Image (cartoon, rainbow, N blue to C red; front, side, top):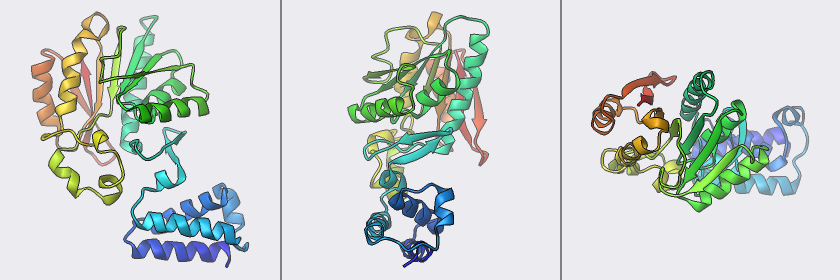
Length: 285
């Protein structure tokens, strides 16, 4: 069987299992089984598939048909041009979160133009996506990254070493801002914001395989964000700074009320994602 034929059969198997973008997913899995870049893969489509590679591909297809996320099967997810290692037990980075990075970089640049030291903390760092992207693109920033999960921090630390960013990010274990013992200027966070009752309705890839503690934001989805906002004032440099949050598609209005309660006088704006949803909240305190 040629690589091209294996690709066709794999895509058909995924399509029958109801997997979206079956052709692309089959290609990603087959390239992973073969250890090939896309360019090398495309020029070898008419090559015969080695039996060992066929077995690896068949195993990957079986697990993907059981709705194991592709990123967990390959161990990789691209985020803001970084090749991040991901593993079960750690949330898979989403494209929407790149808007948080963009806002952090924009505000970081503005602050560096008028003060010598600027510190950003990524709260709930997971695999390190936000912290590492900011550290890569704005080395002048001091970057801290916090997570309550030792497993997540181990993955984040591995990513920092893989990307040669280990010296630019300080990882801290603890609850939200509790382990941070220095003033910060920017708080960036992609915290759990999905309401508890919505979790059972999510795609099986998310519902059954990604860590619930990284998804479940309580009854209204804002429980963890509320706790963070309560901690913010005592951690900002001079009591002033910026909080950047990823939120759910219908949370702009309730977040506005929450900010008015927790951070009176703060300026709140929203950035829309590519779907036009108010996805990122920017709070100037």
